[in-house]
Image (cartoon, rainbow, N blue to C red; front, side):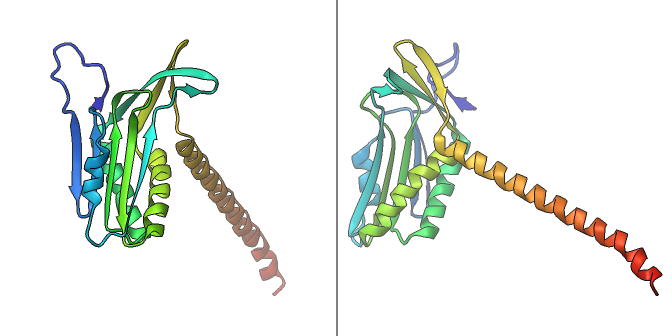
Length: 201
């Protein structure tokens, strides 16, 4: 089911924290405030020479409007699955020791964290690059939706990364269709020439 911040009459409250631990990756979708120190401790390791973190925080303005709060909704099982896939891809790209990613759902007030990513590695370059990549990938593929509340109303926001990924995929599909169409035209042209060549014999 899709988790939303407003409970329906007669429904039991959803669990505050949904998490998944697999290998050296921990992912979490939480209706409670995110715990930076807890995630830091999850990725801590005696072999780590660096722990890099990213914290996405609700700011008080967007597009010249005053932001009152954000509200996040998610299809939690799929969100956890996609977060885990992001971690798996990260582990394949960089030599890291531990990865932890947590995303908030529900009401996130100004100044509160909506997402935290923590990565430990032997050397700083790997964890810094991995954290940078992970937040962009998370925004592009994980099914978590954001509604911004302003002093004059609210609106749902699409992640720019998700839109860019969609446009890129559409562009690739269109190019593939054009190549296939060109190939068909070439094959038709070859078939039309074949009887003429046979007639010359």
